[in-house]
Image (cartoon, rainbow over all chains, first blue to last red; front, top):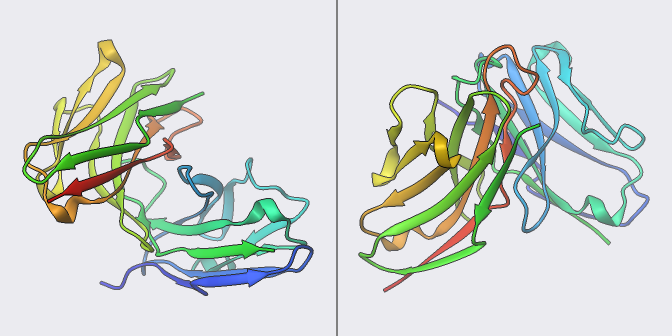
Length: 115
Length: 117
């Protein structure tokens, strides 16, 4: 079974530029998560999708971050404009459903450096 | 609100020694608790989870954790460390069904485990 795929793996941009990350979840997984992991900290949930609908985006900085999950499969996370404090690893995870008993499977992440 | 505190950002052990990584949680509802491992440049992998069944949970790679409600703890242990255990470990909590935190993981800040030969 293929795992969660993310691209790019690394990205370096200057502040005020825009950037987009892509995630392809495990086939058949209805729930998709984006996490932000700042160096030295645990992952923090940014947004949760159930199929193509948003379940929770309470911690997403909506003035600069946006995310979509068209057709309930792939997802993109965009930052525009980027700030220095956005430097982090962005992890995508998926699970069969939002039920906690189902394991979340994580992708390898995209490491973003904002200079 | 739920939270997780991992005591010790770095733990160093010798190969063959006991591994003990500490985790305390705060939750207003009966929690689900998890331990994840993260190897360099990789995503997180689930080691084990507690979902209100047996309080002693066995996971992969010889790890286990014990849920102690009175101490609000969920410490991770392994009797004998192996070089391949060197990684960063994260404890996480989620609320049970019906709560606003259900299905949402809140992570601790992580503990880096170093294993010396």
